[in-house]
Amino acid sequence: MVLRPLVFVAMPFGVKLDALRVPSIDFDAIYEKGIKPALSDLDVDFIRADGALELTALRDRLTSSRGLGGIDPAAFEEILVQLRENQLA
Image (tube, rainbow, N blue to C red; front, side):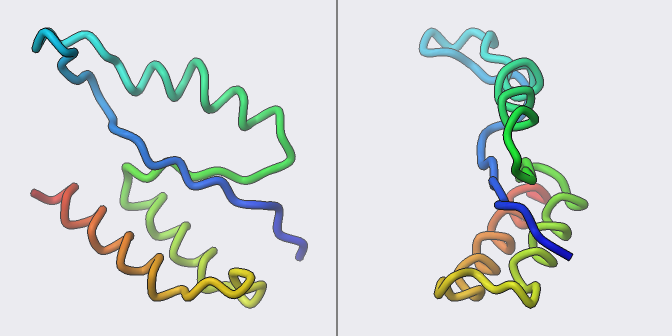
């Protein structure tokens, strides 16, 4: 199996407050209407880092036999742990 390049999208999710503390920045819409369509046009796989299933898929991909081109998988595993802890908080 040939793996395509992987894009890991780390961004906020949901609606967040703007500089005036008004809830007006819809990060889900930004992802769905901008980032996701742009990545779909490329020959890449992509994962948004805001769900347990995506984190599991990312961990599996990072520890695949293809490797990470010299990058230590433990560094990515720590990122996954931190993301999961933040989701459960």
